[in-house]
Image 1 (tube, one colour):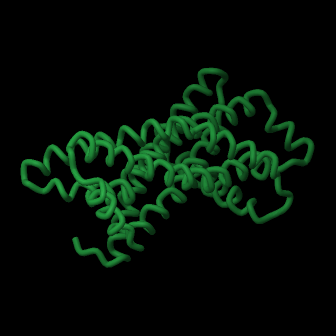
Image 2 (cartoon, helix red, strand yellow):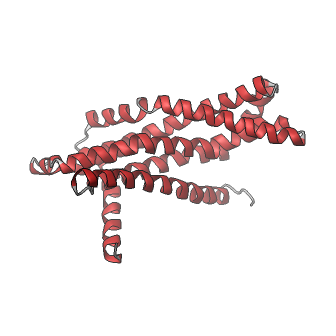
Image 3 (tube, rainbow, N blue to C red):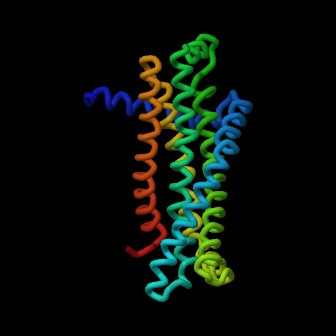
Length: 254
């Protein structure tokens, strides 16, 4: 891809991102489409979020317990699990699962609509595809990914509790009190901000890639794969950038 095409694609992506977000405050509002997308993104993703989050919390607690026991510091398991899940692992794991299920679905659905000329049909009837197709998906991602992250965090902490108490034979009261002490503004704010950024990125990337689909079934496969891979990379990059900014803004010394 030459520089000209890259700049053109970036420009189109920024336009879609801004117009899709601005559509949330401009009429007409497609409430039915937004609720359908929320149901698909939220309720449909809940079971896999629960399973993945549970085992992530259990694996993290198991590994920490094994390492801290060698140093005689098992009492800090709850503290480290709480910080790790709330600030980092919870938002990132939920976003990656969301990308694999919801992001891929967005890209493939919109790509199929492009190949079937349904997007062109909307334009013929005077319907703005950005308002009808992109805005509901951005809105659903901004609402449902933070909600799924909160649920996933709670399940991860429960998984850590199971390992700490029933496998490592630690005090459950100490575990939860350690986590409660870490529920300070800095940790909660960092863990709450990231899902909104991740959800917006996932929705914009997958919608743009889906609407850019060309070349039949093979092109649909390429665009869906590109949407998922790009979203995963951007989640990891955005997580690092946000973590660095938040550590600086919130006054943590490095």
